[in-house]
Image (cartoon, rainbow, N blue to C red):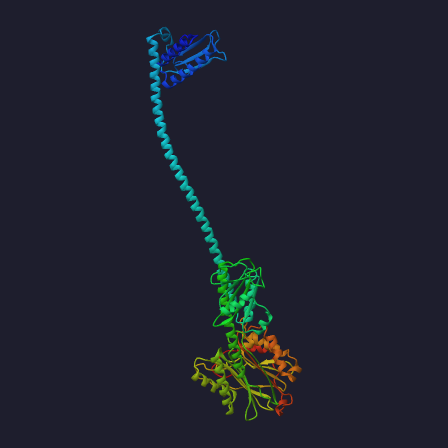
Length: 608
């Protein structure tokens, strides 16, 4: 419901004060909230002052709206000039919510003079005091919440500081982890290179090969140039007319030296001024010391700076290179000594009118080259010639010594006139009693002047191969006896074979025909083919050249795991006896001989 609108006419300050006081009473009676009443009163007072300043008559209209209104019970206050129609643009209008329906008519009927006006003023003061109390409470609450907010902000600031510190620490940890990973990866790379490079230099026992490998390993990754100054190599020294002063200092002091425009601060390495030979580059000179100083490794850096980690790796690689060079030199010395010892035990071949001889010995390319292969040939008191070839198992000084003993013993037994089989039997008995853990193979052939028949015996040795004057080849493939020294009693048997004048008999050790990738029978087959392809004129007139020609197709590669011995025995064409014209069985072709031998070959306890 809506009461009839009330209009209060205002022409003076008294009317304005009275209207404001009446509106305060009306709004208080209607249960309007104090804060809204205070705001309305202050706003109305300001508006009334402006109206009075303009002059003229003004009207304050109050409309009371009940609960049925759209916004519930409230007052609608309008201030406009007297006579002005409602809804004009320049009128002032406000609304005030109430708790119950306002009754503006009652307020209008009561007088507001004297005591009533004073009470109205006091009531307004009371409202103001209450409002101030509320404001103080609100300010107290604001201060409390402001302090609480301040504390909260301090906590938030602290949390942000902690988060920032944690983020910074995490960033530092991440950077440290990345640096550690990079350092670990660099260390892994350097260690891998050191291991591979060490294997490369240690794999060779040739010091020139080791020196040639260093530039391939270090350039361009760790050096732009690699030079090695070895103290005892005059030829190498002559190729280096000038050396960095750092190299000379490293040789004199035995300490690594670093020459550069700026100090490197490398661990365990002395700093020197830049080298006159490379003023814009770093030069690292590392002594090569094994059992004694060997030389200096000179590295001209490929980058402006050598890192401490790289310097440590390079110094260690130099140490391992020095060890490899020392081992290579010791090996070469032992190899040369061993080869001299080996060749000293190989006798000069005798000169015979009825048998021409040629021999070749090739030491193994692996190990110390001290082997047990040997050949021998010597005349007998009855005018016959004994040709011998043998092979002691294993390598080393002990095998060479045993070979010398067997060679000497065989010559001693042969003086007594025994045949090849008996000589081997006596050697076998000596060996199995005196050297029970060493074994040997051997083949002995006896040539008699004017006799086309040769007598031979073998102890576990590859069979002799014969080349006839017409170039046909056959294998003397009687079953060989057991190896010399096998712990059992054994009697070796003599075998006979007919050799036409101008024939060539080849004695050899297994190093000539045996290879890892192929069996010994394949090697013997290759040997028969090589013998058949020899130049007939060279076989007859230049047996040494024929021996060289025979070795070429047999030695396809330069690497040998075993020694090689070859002894060629060529019977003279003019050494003819009455029985030489007798009909003889035609020799089998070489291929058939190889197949026949493969079917019969094997160890045995009796002579063939």
